[in-house]
Amino acid sequence: MMSSTPGTGDDSPPATDAPAGPVISAKDLRVQYGDREILHGISFDVNAMETIVILGGSGSGKSTLLRTLVGLEKPTSGAVWVGGTNLAQASQSELDSARKKIGLSFQGGALIGSMTVGENVALPLLEHTDLNPSTIEVMVRIKLQQVGLIKFQHFMPSQLSGGMKKRAALARATAMDPEILFFDEPSAGLDPITAAGIDALILNLKRALAVTIVVVTHEMASAFLIADRIIVLDGGHIAAIGSIAELKQSTHLRIQQFLNRVPDSDAEDDADHLKLFD
Image (cartoon, rainbow, N blue to C red):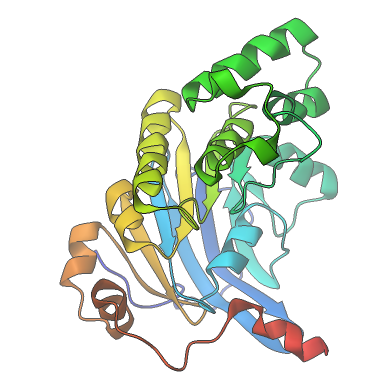
């Protein structure tokens, strides 16, 4: 069913026991920068091996939500369970442990320019495991094979195209065989054919690795191709949660704007909060 109300309407404190079912569970999640609240008490669950797309325009709060879900941002209040850990209350060691269960593919790839593609993929294994070099070499080749870059193991990031950098970043994100994969704007800056290839790769990896996937994007075509369900953010609230079919039937103004590409002259940039500190 569609949901147009943020949160549960329950004023009681969030539960302290980890939810039994969902892999990710946000409960009355709020994030505030200075005097400005970005996320206004949102709640949702993500089930195992589900692909959730977080859709929203500039200033909707989707980037802040992503940072909170991967433990880079502490919520002001509420709870956010990821892989059995409440990140809102976790110690640094608990956060470090939780992050080993997730993989994150950054928008620009964030490859280390002084390392080869293979060395970038090997880095998480070198940092977080005691595997011997020969085993790591085999795992790197497997991950590069999965994303179609096996022939580019010894290339530098500067020698790759935009789409290849995205694939290399994805190989690195899967190096530790995570339970959850997060993608930040995986199709951003790519031509339509390359973007379609990234979407297909995400679908293939979901089937091959049996992982839960969360994708943050503003690309409607990608969302409709890869999502099991879509969360639409609008001004830090959840405008709707539902399947693709349910969203297409929605009469919510913001959803209709996305579907029909209707401009919004009042849209704010997500980085505007920085002006508060000028």
